[in-house]
Length: 454
Image 1: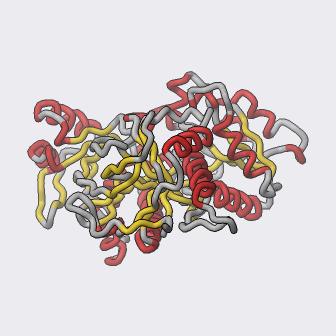
Image 2: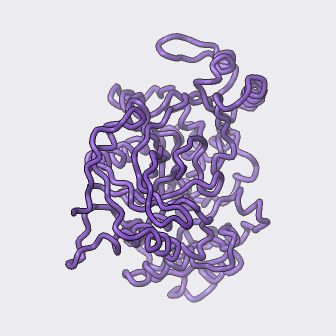
Image 3: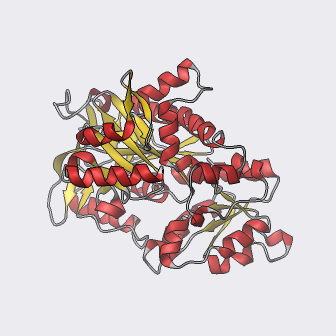
C-alpha cells in the first residue's frame, strides 16, 4: 500500500483546491505523538492534545499558487507601505504608530527599506472561491520557521524509503534562511557571521533550544551563528572586527518585549554600531492591517493586472473611519455600513498578534459590535474586512491516549514562508477538533502542521 490515499471528491465543506489525495499515517499513534513532541521539545511550544498524524498534502499546483501569489502581493504590500510617505517620520505619522514603535530604525533609510521584507508569512484561508489572504506578517519574529522545520524532520523520517526518498516535496525553512543569509552577506560584503537576537523569556521557558536548533543548523551549513539574549548583544559588536556579527535575525517584537519588561536599548546600540538585523523596523508598516486596507481599496499607480490580482486574493478590506468608500460597485458610508453588516465583517486593529485584536462580527452581539466599530472609527487605526467562511480538508489526527488516528475535517490557515523572496516551506494552523474561530496556537490552543506538495 502506497503512502498516498485517494479520498475522492471533497464534500460540501471541502473545496476542489485541496485535491483528492492525502498522505496516510506512516506509523502508530504512539510513535507519531512521541516523535512530534520530542522534536518540538523545550521550545515553548504549548502542549497540543490533538496532533496531526500526517502532513497536510496539497496538489503541486495549489501549493505553488500560494507562493506565487504571496510573492506578487508582497511586492504590492511593500509599495503601498513605502508610498504612504517619503520618510520614516512621515510613515509613523500616517500610520499613527504608537510611541513604542518609534525606535530600532537604522540611520540609512535605504537600508531600512531594502531589508524590511526579508522574512514574510501571510495568513491564508481557502474560501468558497479559493485562497484568500487575511493578513501579511512581515517580521523576523513570525511563527512558523522553527515549527515547520521540526514537523518536517518527523515526516521525513517516517515516510523515507530505503533510499531516503519521500513521497512529497517541501522546502526546509532553515535551508532557505541559511541561503538568504549567505546572499545578504555577499551583497553587503561582510563576513558570514550571523546573530540570532531574541530571548528565551519570549518562549516562556528557560531552555534556549528554540534558537539553538536553528543556530546548530546554520553552523553546520557554512555560516558562523550565535544566539544572543539582549543583555549579551554588546558582544556582537564591542569586540575585535574579525569577531563581530555584522548581520542578524531580529527574532522578537517590541510589544512582546515590552510586556515582559525586556529593554530594547541593547538592540538599538547594536544597530547603531553596524549590526544590521532583518527584517528592519520598517517591516512594521508592511505588516500593518492598514496596508491591507489601502491595497484592497486600490492605489493610483496600480495596473489593471495588479488590481485584478488584489481582487482575486484579498477579501474586501477598508481602513475604518468616517468616510465613503466602494463596496460591490456602489458607494457606501463606511461606518454605518460596518454597523449594519456585522455578520459579514471582521474588525481588526492595525497591529496585533495571535488574534488578540480581532472581533468577528458573527460571533459578537450587535451592541458590542456597534461599540467596537464606533471606538475603532474614532482612532483610524483599524480595518473592517469581509469575513471569509473557510473550507476544509480531511486530515488524520492523533489524540492524547488514543491508540489509533482518527479523521477530522479541519479548516487550515496556511502560512507560506518567504525568505529573501524564495519559498521556504509552509506552516499551517487549525483546530484539531474541526471547530471554527480565531486560529492561533499560542492564543487559542489550535494545532499545527507543515504542508507538503504531492
